[in-house]
Image 1 (tube, rainbow, N blue to C red):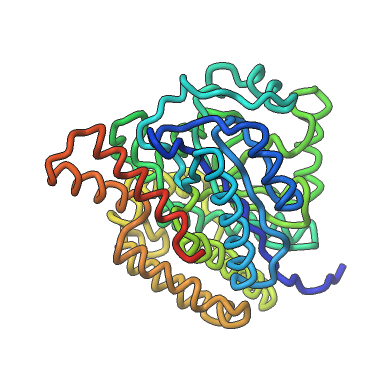
Image 2: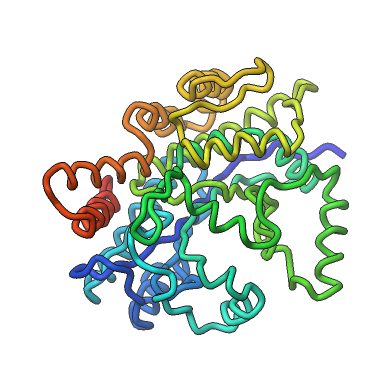
Length: 377
């Protein structure tokens, strides 16, 4: 059956960590802080699994410019209210030195159930992510585009890494967050699905047996949203600055539109087995943009800068149509200046070179993250 063309609206969700402005360690937020944020942002903020976290979400945005204004408003409010409680937000997927064993879980029924079900695996979920929704009203089209878009998830992950440190040590990873998150059930790359009906039947099998209450407990890197008529990319680390958030959101939007556009011409992106895509996912998780990804068509590892230029060629028409050219251009700056993880390591190395000890160098990273949070506000 024919259906209207999608409008490719976007929505962005970000999870922030809250640090004590004196110690720079993670600190649980008082309930009053959360109540104020939820009230002032009219429901666009919510608590997270840990009391040292808060999640925000934009409204439905037609363009990345619209999303920018939303994120400026949301980040500004969270930072302002946090300051009243000697707290500051940071947008990094792992805190450089705080220990997960010291954190307090939010006292809500949803999170108590998660704590019970996930046991020790859930306790250490001291991680924050970024989710990008792209509006695709037709259900079967959501599934079809999801099958194709997952090829590009490693490319988005490579540019997004912001979690190199874990409990005071450099993990060597660009995204240690994903290493932690992959311990949960129903995570990783989505399987190839033939139709919306097949997806619904699979979900119903788990719901009917009482394993999950709904599809919101399916935590794939890319999934049909449980709440909205969107596909939801969940692969990215949260970004220290708004500019890189919008670059990744814009690329997600434009890649989705490009794949839809191929379909309009009776073409499609080649579907690769998850076994192969997972190898690029690992390379992105480990190396970020520094060691390249496999181009399966060319049959070789290519520098990330070359892959990015290819992506820009693919989405040129779409970036113009979505008015996203300026925002996605920032992706080139990630190649030149490094990911959030690269920048955190640079801060640490500069502090050590200046004669600071390890603890003070780690604190310098948090100071940089608190400053980066405000860039562009």
